[in-house]
Length: 224
Image (cartoon, rainbow, N blue to C red; front, side, top):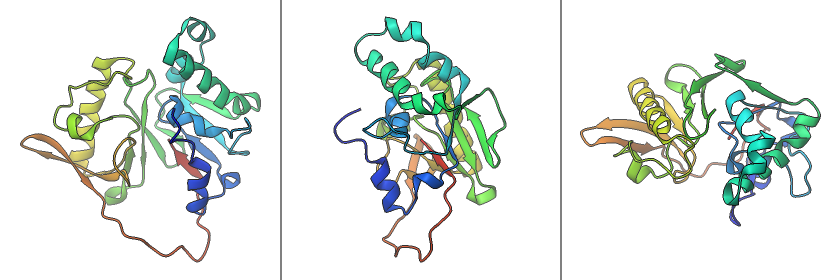
């Protein structure tokens, strides 16, 4: 959704991840900036053997031909982009939806964060101190919404449900001291949510340049 997007393939290469080795892609929701990277500019699947997973509520909404036909403007762009991005996976039976599943794939648990979209989903990976919650678009402006979770975004399908989901995610992440992987936050988008007297604050992970690993890492899962 813009000229500064579309770098998934090059970023995977920089991380020494071969898309052909990815087995599963789990989507937090089906907005184009989270699902559009499934295909190349030529319309070919970026992940030739992967199964793509998304919530049934999101698929039912964004892949509904009647809603798509009635949509206009930016909304029509969303419907068209999502349908185009998922087409090669749907045609080969590699697009799978889920309801309120405990695990989408082994080791990947879901957290219902519906509101931003009808099936907006968070994913939990890891255990104990290493648990990470990938919460998708729970927030869009960390400087505003961490202090005021009741501030909604224009892109939210259901503003009231999105506010409830945001409060839920903040409470879960802060009380359990989970790591958070978040979209629309400054690089690197990883950190902790801390409760304070003003509401919540973001504690980003510290990072430094590292040498490339000597061997290729196994990367069977992507979240978006």
